[in-house]
Length: 224
Image 1 (tube, rainbow, N blue to C red):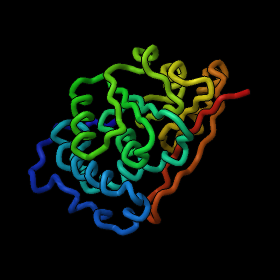
Image 2: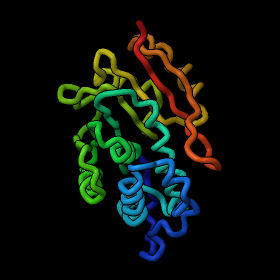
Image 3: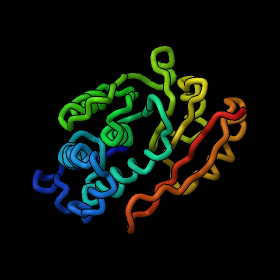
Image 4: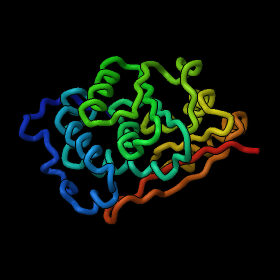
């Protein structure tokens, strides 16, 4: 989830052309068969993201690194079953995940109407037909949504995410959260909440392509 500052950006700048990773063969190799769908989403995000308050104008030159590859890094940690992206916002990481894992059902949970409209539109325009958009907060949809894996990016601290999202998890469910460098500190602060939810945490450094900083992923798994 990302917020823009409302700055107007000329149409000629709303493109991936100025992104140094655009057209990089390593990106296509990393994404494999999913590359056409992911690229379509990246292009749409570059074109519409600032206008619709999803990303900031200064992020247009690094959509691939900051948003797409950062989101893609969580995929190896998603186990099996239904994936629920909480606070999906711009579709990061949810739509990237759905584009990369077309055989999996990905539920995008988002409370804001204008963002759910974007998610519906983006999924349709990019040929991502395994994404389901649900409007609401995590704590509001627990009766209708069950997750084998919950993911989230730039939504809240780990302790808050556990309180909100643990009720969505199946009996064997887990969480894979995109975090920053303070992840170990967040885990320490969340230890009592994790214990109550019967979850244990681990911090991972998830690499994508050479030259791009690894993404920090925190996995939360059921304890015995």
